[in-house]
Image (cartoon, rainbow, N blue to C red; front, side, top):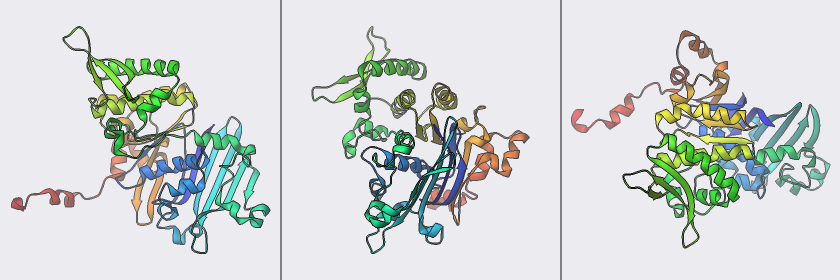
Length: 387
C-alpha cells in the first residue's frame, strides 16, 4: 500500500493543498513556508490511527484545534479542517476523508464533521450516521482509531500507524534529560534505548550494516556497538583507529553532530523496510558532508527498490535535488502567498521548461522560492560605523 494523492483545507498555514504523491516526494520551499507542517500532516494521520492515539489526542498534542486549523479557515471550507487521502494497494483504490470542526457551546472539542471511507469507488463508511445523531458524543472519535469500528478498512489504519518520522537533535541524544521523556521520540531522547530494545539478532545485523557504511563515510571509524552502564542506561560506543594497537573508544557524548545525525539516518533507513509504510525525513542533510548528501537520493532509491517504503522528505540541499534520478514530478514546491502557502509539483509549473534549457533542478527551484530582496537582511548586519 502507498499514498497516491493528498488534499487538505485549513491545515496549518495552508488554506488549500492538492498534490500527487509518488514513491518519493522532495518538499522544498523558503523558511516558514510550511515544510515541517506538511510533514506533520502525515504524522497527524498516524497519531489519529495509532495505538494509544486518536483524534482528541492528536489535536491536543499540537496545542488544540486553534493551533492546527489555518488562520484562513474562517471563510474557507466552512471553517472545517479537512484531510482527504487516496491510497493504492495492488489493484485496490482507497480513499479516506476526514472533516473536523470545533464543538459548539463554548467547549470547542474537536468533533468529526464528516468521515468517509471508499474502496474502489464504493462507500464503506459515511458519518455522521443514525447512531451518531442519536448519540453525538460518538463524534468525538473517528472510526479510524477504533478497532471495533474499522474492521472493513483496518488496512488503512494500520498503514497510517506505520508512519515514521526522523529529525534527530544531537544535543538531545547526548543529554536526553533536556526534554521530557517520550516513547518513540523523533528528536532522539529515547533513540539509543530504541536501538537497544530491538531484538538482539536483528539489532546486531543492522549495526553491522551501519558500521560498514560509517567506515566508508567517517574518517578513522572502525566499530559501532551498544553498551549498558552501571545504571542500566545504554550508550553508543564507537572505535576509532589511531597509532595504538587498539582503537580509541568514544561514546555518543563525544560524537560530532554529523556522526550522530548520520547514525540516526542510517538506523531509520535500515529499519524502515522491516515495517514498511511512510518514512518522513526532515532536512536529512543537516550537519552532513556534501559528498554524503549527494548520494542520499541513491541510497533512498535503493531502499525503495527493496521494499514498499514510501519516502517523503524536506530539504534545502541542492545536492539532493540535482541527483539525476530526481524527477520534476517528485519535487513539491512550496511558496508563501497572501492567501496562505501553496504547494505544486515542479512538473506542473511553467518553470519546468527551464530544465530543458540546461538549468539544474536546484537552480529552477531556487528561482521560484528565493526571497526577492535580501538587502534588508544585509543592512541589518552592517556595523553602525559603516553606515
